[in-house]
Structure formats: C-alpha cells, structure tokens
Amino acid sequence: MAKLIDGKAIAATVRAEVAQEVAELQERDGVTPGLAVVIVGNDPASRTYVNNKKKACAEAGIYSEEYALPAETTQQELLDLIQVLNKKQDIDGILVQLPLPKGLDEKAVIEAIDPGKDVDAFHESNVGRIMIGNFHFLPCTPAGVMELLRSEGIEVAGKNCVVVGRSNIVGKPMAMLLLHQNGTVTVCHSKTADLPSVCRGADILVSAVGKAKFITADMVKPGAVVIDVGMNRDENGKLCGDVDFTAVEPIASYITPVPGGVGPMTIAMLLKNTVTAAKLHCGLAQ
Ligand code: GUN
Image 1 (cartoon, protein in one colour):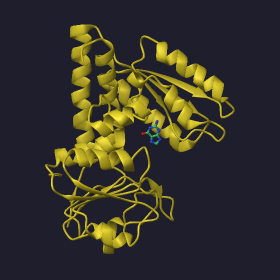
Image 2 (cartoon, rainbow, N blue to C red; image 1 turned 45 degrees about the horizontal axis):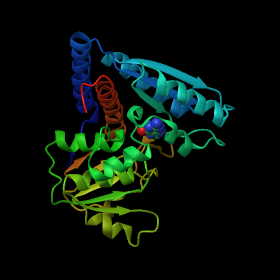
Image 3 (cartoon, rainbow, N blue to C red; image 1 turned 90 degrees about the vertical axis):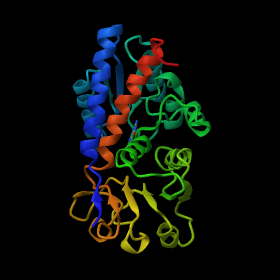
C-alpha cells in the first residue's frame, strides 16, 4: 500500500507561507504583489483554472486582474495587451492561460512577456536560466512536484528518475529540476522503445502524458514513487490522471492522487513566483 501524497495539504502549507510573506511585504515595504491573468476564448477547463488562480491570489493577499478576451481576438490585440501589462507598475506577474484558441501564436505571445514578469517561466530566457541553474522562477507544475518530494522527505540524489512526456511546460523542465537535485534522469516519449521496461527502472516515475490509465501496474517497480501530472477524464467523465491508480497504488511506496496531488501545487507555486517577481521589481531580491 502506497502512502498518498496529499497535494492539497502541502499546497495549503505553501499558500499559508506565501500569505505570511505577502503580509510582511505589505507591512514592512508597502509592496503588494500583483498578477495579471489573461484568458482568451471560452475553454471551460481554462475558465476553471483561471477562477482558481484568482481565488488563490485573493486568499494570499495578492492583487489580481483578469483580462478575458473573446476567441476572435487577433494576435496583434493580444500582443498589444501584453505590452501594456509589461509596463503596468502594479503588475508583477503576467500569466496567459494556455492553450490559446486556434490562429494565435502561443510562442510569439510567450516571448512578448517581459521575462521578469513571466511567472510561468515559459519565456526562452527563463528556460535558459533553468537549464543553467541560475533562475528566478521555476515553471509551476515541475516546481510543485519538487516541493511534494521535498515535503515528503523523498531523496532524489542518486535515484533513477523517469519522466514520461517531453512538453516544454512539464516534461523537459521536470527532467531538469530532477537533474539539479542529482537524480539520474531519463525522458520518455512516444518514440521510446519498450516504454514499460524503461519505466520499470524508475525509483521515481513522473507521468505527464495526458492519457487516462496510461501507466499500468506492469510499468512500475515495487516501491517506486509515482507522481501523476495527468489531468484527464475517464470513460465516465470523472477526473483522473495518467496512472491506473487502483492497479498501481498497491505496488508503489508513494503515489499522488488525481485530483488532490500535483494540481493544487501548481497554483501554490504560481503564487510563490508572483511574490518573487514583486521582490525583484522593488529591489528586495536579485
Ligand atoms: N495551461 C495548463 N497549464 C498551464 C500553466 O501552468 N500555465 C498557463 N499559462 N497555462 C496553462
């Protein structure tokens, strides 16, 4: 029987720490961190994520603004808004919720964000900083996974870490953060030969694939730590991760549930990045 990693509880602790830091910043330095959240179109999942982000900001004492644009917004209109937000004094962090509607160029939008306000850490200069290990912001989901491991006292150094999925948002930065902690990291993808055997070599298995029941029991070494970044719907429309939880849970030593595992951490780390951005902007951090 695996120990469940309670992302909701760990995220609550991080959020309380952030709220404490925001209160201190306000009292001591008169600084209120500010986040602008941009949502384009009406994807229901994006709407839920954005609502949760705004609520979390309010609870932590972070000022937030929402910019909800119609699906027909042009690239130029979106870039113009980003230029305004880049200059806006009361905004420390800018988050453009992805995916963007068809016709909009996500890469160009991300690159238009001031890297010092890029609290998603998607801008190529922030990605480069992460590669070198000289970063201000870490991408929220991989950073959330690292915080779960740290909080459970799970040592990464010397462990075989297998990341399934190579997206720019999760898989690639996840691999880099595990490497920074001296894990021996393998990144798997759709062309990986004999994926089950590679996964079975993992002491720490992180799945970020986006397919329900993708990680089956035969892919997990007994005693492995299993981190499920997936956010999918099963055949009954119920929220589930990438891991066949019922089959894998008896084999693993630790496992994250979906919901209530990695998901809550993503928002907690976004709040942390917004506070970091505010400290950078007012000269309280370098
Ligand atoms: N869509 C899904 N995850 C994310 C995220 O972490 N940041 C942004 N901006 N959009 C997302």
